[in-house]
Length: 327
Image (cartoon, rainbow, N blue to C red; front, side):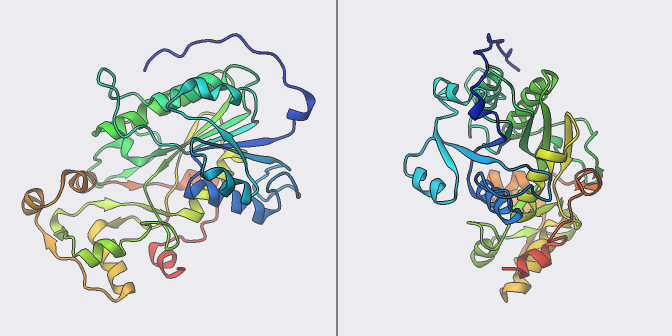
């Protein structure tokens, strides 16, 4: 990881900035669900009582690099802040602004030529958060892909990371940057997230894939996958922001690891569509694109006991069947 520069503090903020503020970085579908969950608990957009997650009365801000999104964010009760993670000079206004930060932005699709494993977006965010009064807590949305292939074994958060793809290595680099900030006194939490689904999320179900007839692996070659409904993920983000233990990783997944083909079969039956054809791995390697094959090359079952016991999260959709039917 590239070294994180130490900056001279800019000084204390005026009193009007000292109340609790949540900054969402990467406020897409999941970020908006987080805000709706807060509002549903009575703690949204600067008014209401403390929520069931322990969140105080607070104001929600969101970083956006897209002018067209400003109106959408305001309509949701969010204060938009213009800035771009790919242009670090635009982030300086974030220094000392938030008491809590939810970092949902992914790394770039490709790394730099000389440092393809680095997530420059997370490093830029971490640098600016060190400029003034640091946030009390930061939650980073990572991926379960940082473990690489585990041959179907049960995986706990203490397992050493072994990212096998460039995108997973950039996620592991982002985790290291977040932990570095944690050593500076910020209570950081890392959420390792598998496949996100929801019937009301763009591309949030396998229906389109099923309609195309995309094959799945034959049972003897199939891999275990894990899932989380987008609404439960949003609630896990809030639980981690106010209940997460310092410098702790959490698996955010439901109670039902499944073979990938079984997941597609279940969805096909729910939608009244044909089940996908099954291919041996050797045939799949000749027919399917590399990106799809990469998801078929890693098998693991995530242990979510920390999520349930430490964060005290009660899943609304403990199984994929319940989550898909909810739509």
